[in-house]
Image 1 (tube, rainbow, N blue to C red):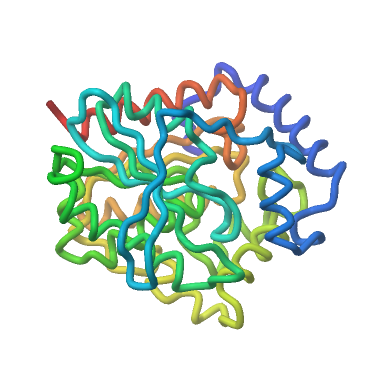
Image 2 (image 1 turned 180 degrees about the horizontal axis):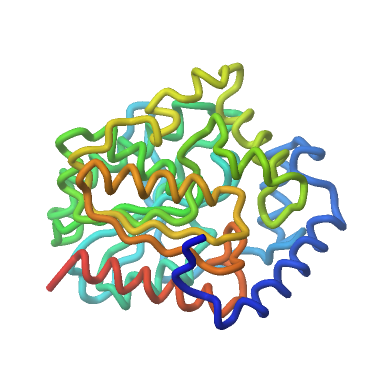
Length: 314
């Protein structure tokens, strides 16, 4: 296994994984509760393994136009804006909000010198595929046209975590030639084969933010009634798409993530298609690790800020 970082603090990360697994094991699993609205409400109250999101006054809420109506976005605008980062949150296409990562996104905005636009795309099961991808594509097309007017900068970067990384990749593919408007993509522990890669299938029931049953539950909500072969459509599983002409991408995943193969396979295909890539494989890190109190999380978020700043340039 190629591990590029985190070996020096692997003991800390392993110990955290044991605590995280115990927290998840103590309560009902997502697929057992099987009630996305109730889970969203509980997470907003800080119930379960996650604290309630911290919302910052620096973030503002607005809407932008989309094919199905207005799309809510959360915007962070620092004093100096050299570019714009289009962000898609994670949550298995079913959970999560654009205001659930305010401190992280505000720090990215101030240190990288970018305005951040985080998209509250529609969620499954109320709005299954293609609703979320449609909103993300519409947000990207709006930003390409409006960035100069709205933010005084036209240097764009795209990215997200987990389902958000999947949506970022899908969005770039949907944009076609217009994807060249984005200088880079930050793709953090994404899912790129929704028919399930070997690591997804073989992981089992140990829940470190994800497990095989939880992954199956998420994709079932997002893609109701789709066969495994239908899930290999490039618009659903970008691993199967032609990937030429895409911007440089930075891929990140931990070795204790059921989506490990997704990143390894997608980075290899992205690179083989002639695009620039960076790959970070973090020793012992679980899915979602950038949101946990870990040394590897602090390091990774700093690397992401550096990557975005470098992509934007001076």
